[in-house]
Image 1 (cartoon, rainbow, N blue to C red):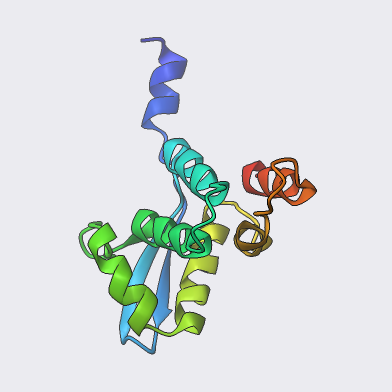
Image 2: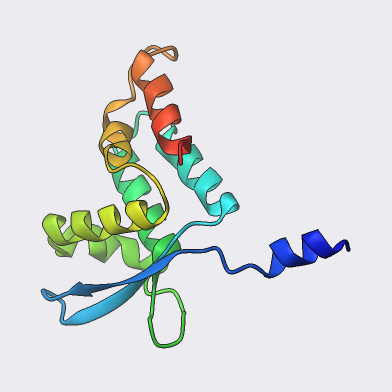
Length: 138
């Protein structure tokens, strides 16, 4: 491997931030998404199935991907936790946490709002094009 590739590979370029959640009496490390995680997030946000769960799926993807235990770096949430998170916890708290995840990942806050609005019966809806641009811009 070339010297430049070694340098790039060893660079620690994932942003992280500790977020206090006073309502839960915890602090959570919010870490930016890798390229693969961002691609998965974009795919989830552009899902055109009409099951009514799109925004919940996007929120869940973000929480599972970006929220880590600040002490050991392990994921705070798993897919199994999403049911109780979405039905038992405050929307305002979850919104704040998701917004922090998006910000540390270099994604615009309005991307999550657009994810819930972009579905229409037309596959060429202009909202979807805007969503793609918002989610992929750095």
